Image (cartoon, rainbow, N blue to C red; front, side, top):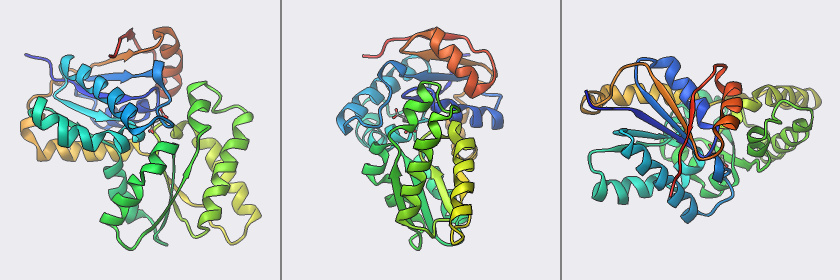
Length: 283
Ligand code: DGL
């Protein structure tokens, strides 16, 4: 049988939270994870650079035998997905598909908020792109969306500082800035795939902020993994022609553009299992 992997791409480790959600729901498929750790973070990079880097990764995953690639990265989904889908695929790879993480998240969030006031925490690139505001307002026109860039959060995760006391300041600071923009927020999207690693800190700080401010009820947090998994499962049901091309051996291979040893150590924190990692070059 020819190879038919589901490819999952992120700038670094963050996409492992998406991979984990997907594999928990659909362990039977074969996966390839590619982290561009050598060039992470993508969050502050320009549209053109994120597009070029993401396209290099997508092409590599196609070459490796993935008919379907998920951009497990909000920044790449915000800055590169539309151009890849509309310009690259029709011309160069009409039989392949690339999906992102923003639309599936936008679909569920409107149904979860009671006040209709939604907050987005993400990288500077995702916030500036306004992708969440546009998608949510298209799908749920009665919702109000405000975003807050958290430039320090990805470095805290990439450098394994996310559960250290130093992280508290940066988590609290961004949450306060978000809630000051709209105190009626009852639902917060973690719009960066690195952020679920900071969930304990986020919950602690939110609980403290709502104790200090009796007007504030603790908002509901949406990490993306489980929703992206449900959306992918639905996609494969609706696209049996793609589903048939995917092999089901239950395997997962990992590739990084940085040191495999470093990736292996950090991946353990995300996946709680030993992984076998290989180096890869993108250009
Ligand atoms: N994990 C990525 C995201 O979801 C981006 C992190 C970065 O490279 O800045 O946005």
